[in-house]
Image (tube, rainbow, N blue to C red; front, side):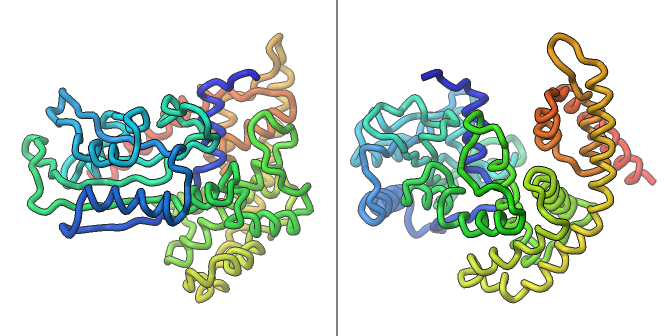
Length: 391
């Protein structure tokens, strides 16, 4: 079997386990208990209550940082060694195992719990390597320092805190023995509703090079984004032109693009999916039921307004494809980074969708050119913001 390169594994990992909206389970303590209890209870819950095989559990702890003058979290390591052999208790540096909320303020070491989906192997080398078969399930953060504003030094807190976060969707995929979050009963009702709304081929759960049609990617994008939209709007946000509202508008347009261009969905298909999200999650999150009509109306309005923009974007894409096709060379046609950026900036086309549409026509996209144009856009935006402040 040919091994996938690291970038391919990264893409597969993102497709299977990462979301724009996800549910976080956890527990907190503000001085009532600390590492001994948090670690012991996490182990008990996962192995005794959820019955996860203990021989497929790996954990990480903070291994220290000489440059910063921070010692290793030997306390957390020694607690884990009561449950696991040394080969599955692994030290990592600040990037993976030291939590900070910013340049200053509360911070501290953390310990992550990873689960090997395959079993009967040594998966230590796969921990924290973006391998989808060995995933992080739970992160236990021990807030025991304050990073001082004056000199950036770490000052021990008088009361030590615990803040843990466990991914609900990831845990569900493990308990249901599914290879992806999207294959669980958390997402399948939404995926089935997308199929009914668009008439596309049923969702098959394939990723990467496993399939040619690319429809499963579109299914996942739409399912993820409609959940995000429903919860954000129920929480009082709304698609718009600034800040987080602009992010929400981008998410909505990305969902519409994939649903319309890849799944051939009708003009109002996205707003029609609000019902299945409410049916699936409304009992646990009653605010979805309370705001169902408003959520649907807001999404429907945005879909309608985006319709004409989408058509203009398609026309621009076809012109860019024609230009790239006329410039074919030995390596095939390349759609310019500037055209890809204009599709993103003016018409809301996400780069990955442009790449997908170009690929279907035998073309590549100049990703580096797109990123260069994006960086120039950011610089212009910062300059404009500074001028506004000076006025």
